[in-house]
Image 1 (cartoon, rainbow, N blue to C red):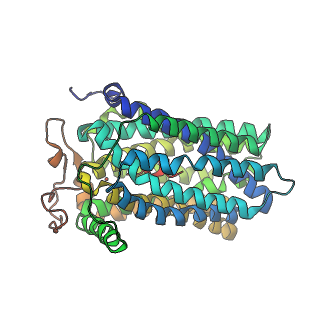
Image 2: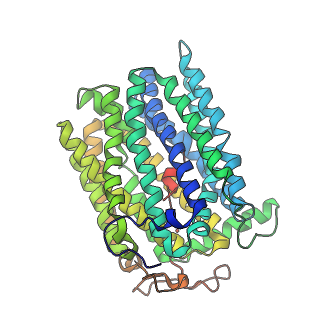
Image 3: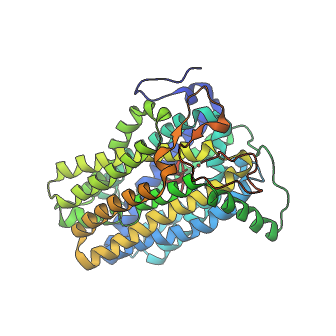
Length: 456
């Protein structure tokens, strides 16, 4: 089937793959609940501690277990049925969300329960995240990865638009426990959808189940990533976009101090980037023919928009700027995902996806913690402005240092998957024994992508 040539979103993966439709629906249900909970946790932490630093630290408490989880989960995804791994790691999250609901009903909610539940959520999400990333190419084919990435990111952003807005209303109305209860229901929807997906074993199961073999398998993934300049550039430009440029930790503070609002305004701040991302997804048909220059431009749009957001006290303008930031983030996620996944062989997709998720999880968490600390020192508005300017400077530096990133492009549909990502630069490292036969691989995301999106 011919690839669409206009701006409209390419819906071919949904039309052609029943299993991708199921995963799409399940992911959307889980994300609606998860992003309602992100608002509830931020508001609850601020109510209990009154500290923006704690809001950032709770993100870090989730990120560290995610790192452990994705490294293990990447190995598991290359050895075992990816559908079963998704089920085994997402269904228990229903109980974690239920525990948060019970804690919220206590006269004095326990702070340690929030941290513990967040850490356990991160561990389970990390264990299952690489399996979801690795499953998508098998469901849609490598030639549809940009379209699948845009659709998956669109579902996450639709959830980010709906979830926080409804979450803010529920916190202001029925209360925090209602948000956590809906989150539990969302994970049940995801589990039910994944249960109906066909088995998804790796194309070539990796031998060996011992600890030494597991470390060797992770090392193979690291060598593959290290040997490809484009992948290194993709990792660094994503870090440039996230570190010091994650204002979500400050939304409760900004809603109170900068815009004079309560939980309802917090919900709007969370939802505005999702609206921009949905607009980006609806016009993402062109991304299947784009490449590095478009990616760099999208990250710059993110940083500049957040700089303007931090500088204004006019709520409507702030929401527009957040929407532009969300549009830039959606385009950059879509392109990073497609560039990464195109060049990674199936037998390495779990491990490479796991390593990508480490960066995609740690960078935003460090960003939230860093912005929270910076806000304690300079104030919330100044922290957001400085973070946006840092993003712009770091993005330009990465683009200058990595010609492979600037010149990378997605192949035309008539090209073979093996050459589907090309680069006009010659700074490609030679393949090692692990990636023999994939010398041109320049590679795979966050569905977030799902890496950012699926981490919850």
